[in-house]
Length: 171
Ligand code: AR6
Image (cartoon, rainbow, N blue to C red; front, side, top):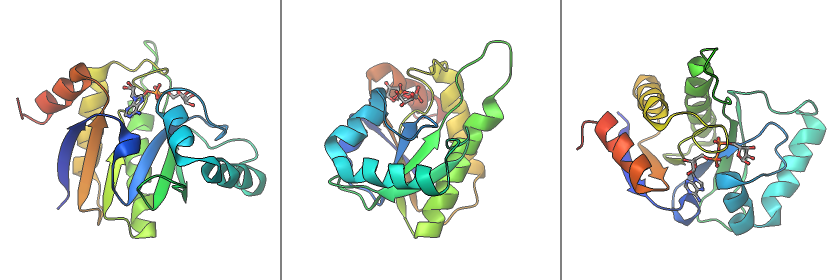
């Protein structure tokens, strides 16, 4: 049974086994939570991302998949990079967003991680509406068969926190 916790704040301050990064397929960093993770985690994360690109992901990490690196100087053992879908009003990409959570938890299981922090994947630069993203995130975690004991959703602002709290019936 996986416990879901909600936290408001900066995911790079969390102390967990694995921090999930809302990356892009290049794995070479970006803005938003990706930029914050690389900034605070230091260059070791990017070094490993570059090696992963060279060895396995020359064409980029596909949307909906996940891969782990060191967490560098973050208070975590791993960063799990996943690529969320860009929001589309004409195409239903929710299965890809659910896959980000599922695949990240699968990678966490492979690593033996028991506590995993997630940001609200795709809800920033990729423009996914928060309410729909919260529903998909919570359902994906509820449906996942995982040994992860605690999933911590780390929401950056009040609105995101309140939306996840409502989705969990905690408000
Ligand atoms: N801690 C927790 N949540 C955060 C933080 C933080 N430090 N910073 C931002 N958020 P985004 P995406 C929230 O844009 O939509 C990058 O450039 C933010 O408020 O980081 O999946 C990548 O390289 C929002 O709710 O990720 C990709 O190119 C959520 O995290 C692209 O953005 C996700 O916003 C990915 O876009």
